[in-house]
Structures are given as C-alpha cells and as structure tokens.
Length: 127
Image (cartoon, rainbow, N blue to C red; front, side, top):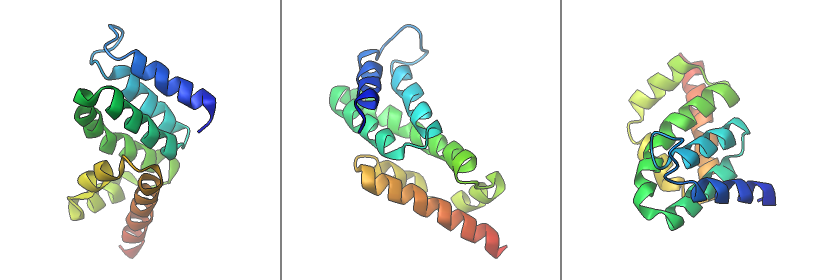
C-alpha cells in the first residue's frame, strides 16, 4: 500500500467522532467512498481492517455501509447496469454477507467484488 494511502487511512481513523460528520464513522465512510472512486478495492479492505482494529465498536456499522458503496462502485467502475444489479441481488440474497465476510482479506475482497461484477454481467447477458 502506498504510504500516502496509509496516511489517509490513519487520518480517517484519527478523525473518528469528528463533529464535521453526522456519524462517528463518517471520516472512514468518506475515505471508503473515495477509495472505491479511485478503484482501489485492496486499500478499501485494508482501511476497514485497520478501522476494525482501532475502533472495533464501529466495525459492524461501517461494514453495513459497504454493500451500498460496492453497488455504486460496480455501476460506476465495472459498467454494471443498475437494473441488472437489482435483479442479481434479488437472486443472490446472501451477497451482502459474502461481501462483508471478505472485507478482512484484501485479496479475497477484490476477487469477490470482481466475481460479483462478472456474475451480474453474465446474468444480464442471458436475458
């Protein structure tokens, strides 16, 4: 991980509870959004791991926000159509748990997200 990314993660964790956000985890959630925008899923996962160690009480809340962030990522960065995503999530109700379970392993997390993108596109192509 580039030192600059590590610094951004450390800064976000240190800013936990900042009054500038509506939730204590706001700085980390904001950083996760930016990392997804930068197509850096491995750092996204690493940021979560470091947050979970530094602020374990906030980990479940942050993990709960990950499926929405990854849904947006898939639409913006993997050219997944929103309608195809919705159909796929209805057919795969365990996808959010699979995604959250992969969060603590950067390589697995990247693989799971890319597998989701492929599966959604294949499902859309079949229709």
